[in-house]
Length: 301
Ligand SMILES: NC(=O)c1ccc[n+]([C@@H]2O[C@H](COP(=O)([O-])OP(=O)(O)OC[C@H]3O[C@@H](n4cnc5c(N)ncnc54)[C@H](OP(=O)(O)O)[C@@H]3O)[C@@H](O)[C@H]2O)c1
Image 1 (cartoon, rainbow, N blue to C red):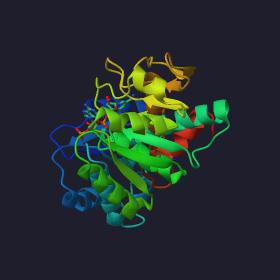
Image 2: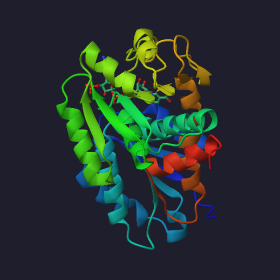
Image 3: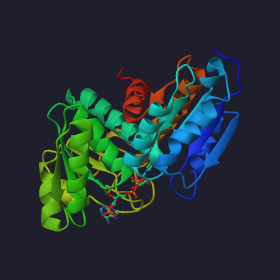
Image 4: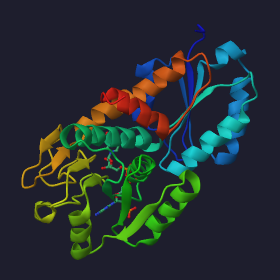
């Protein structure tokens, strides 16, 4: 392994780089961390090439780029642009994790998968999933990860179905997965979605309740509900912060709470930064690598 100083260039398309991600990178071992804000996709090639030619190739692997922001597709486009900008043997490592969404979604999918396997002998294959907060970055990434594993995923729209239709179309084009957009604006629509789901991912905005105890009492197919929202009230009524496969009150379903997910998310993001620092080869990491590592972290791989 090279003894070059680990340097991380952190790119944000908006006006702040997330302090959470800066802290995670420092605690994982990066010694020099430089945030860049208001970065446009067209600027990524120039920034990568400016960095890679300044260090000999064996130092290049200790140079990292992080793609942040709040837009999953833009972060993936930036990662792709970075890959194309490499001039072997002058290369560096890159990680995309916009708003922490790839590592959060990967952690949620892996935590639920463990409960499905251990408590129900099930995998994702054919499992019916309903995603609340499907237009958000965490909802979007968790839909794709679970669908790639064979789940039948519904993207629930809470105001206007057009944006979830757009997400389903993008997911088909980019990842080859079929996601079903469904309207979830009225109580009747939500009741029906919840009644037919086996797994629920509650990934709506912080402090927003998406599943009530009345709704879950009527839902007889529910196996597991996961909630990433740690700000009261919980996204799923009765969810406790550290639940990890325990029965939810008022329902036969099992719960996976935000801090059980957060623990794996934290270890996953830290682990991906460490992989970049320790690797002898340049890496390009996205939600697929986050999911692979999360499965190991929960003991599934
Ligand atoms: N536990 C962890 O480790 C962890 C880590 C990161 C994030 N989080 C949490 O994950 C959640 C999602 O984060 P994010 O970054 O993906 O947020 P985001 O991009 O802002 O997305 C929020 C989603 O919630 C939806 N929403 C807003 N109000 C709603 C309502 N009243 N009913 C139903 N849906 C509603 C939004 O829909 P519209 O687009 O229509 O507004 C959007 O789909 C947040 O609660 C965040 O705190 C947890």
